[in-house]
Length: 142
Image (cartoon, rainbow, N blue to C red; front, side, top):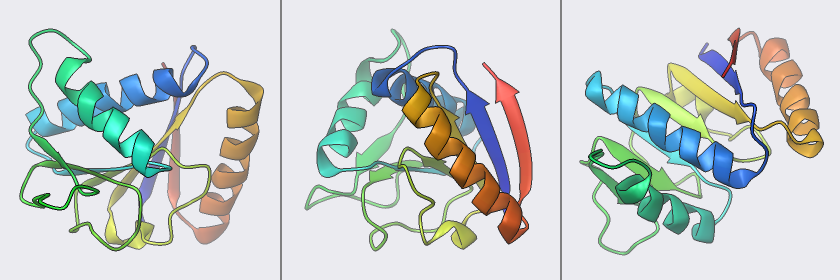
């Protein structure tokens, strides 16, 4: 079973989730962990690809977007929006509204929850589903 960390953000909106995903991916990379960021759509994946270059001055997070035809899975951080193109990683950052069907391939999962009501409601459903599946759950207020 995976350890699932719910990060409760004080900001609203998708951009806050994506920005925090970049910070979390950078931290994991600096600790020599591999990361897969699971985006809700191809456009979200491409937005994250760009954001990882610009979210903070001086940061460097080597990554590849798996939605591009020449993407390499050898990068420490990958970004994708489907369940067929990733290699096993140390951490899954889930930016989707549902639990991905492939979470068993990851020892750790990060769920990012913005403070808007829709995101909170969907996250509560995922929390209950993870709990019912027997995963270890932690909550962090950020």
